[in-house]
Image (cartoon, rainbow over all chains, first blue to last red; front, side, top):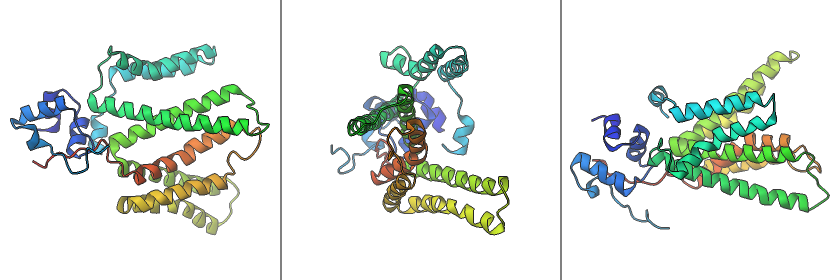
Length: 56
Length: 242
């Protein structure tokens, strides 16, 4: 699946998918769930919370 | 943005319409300055409509980038406002032309918003490298054209003057490998140029000239330095590799 196809399926731009892949952007819960649904996995398999990431 | 992203980029209908309003507005200012309001409408109108929920042309990443850029513009303009009030209250200084002050603030707001957007879309290191490269090539261009255009000052000058652009290319190289030290060097460079240009030292200064020099010349250096020191990681995600 290309980035554009994935972007179209979850209703965002390819720029957003690219930024998520590069770790530049944390998606909203809704988008994370939509991505997980496309890949037929649970959200935790796509994203992880690294230590200290949620501080402040 | 990678090369392929540039090829894929297409302006949306909203940005085309807003861009058209801005151009027409500027063009009509030759008739009346009231048409500058059209420029304001084109610049800020789409954002207002998005905040009202009447325009949904951006996805969540773009909206968040816009919000951050707006907040950065607010912080910068806020600091500038306090600095200017202190500056004018501290002596017998007056603003010769109040429209200059408003223009300066508009430039500051827009430029901060623009730089912050670049940081959001390209990431810190790529943005800093590109900004410094643009600076380097601009200096190089000025150095070469200055020698060719004016009286011929000889081959040594033609060869030596372009060396002034070298620090920018060196900093671009350093910022990719050692972002934090490069950030400090950029802030030092900005302070050096602040001193070099003797900025904001005189009473009744030419506010726009000084301000625009500050925004266009020191602004990118300051913003790049701060971004590198802050270890900007976009919006900080950790997607798994899978």
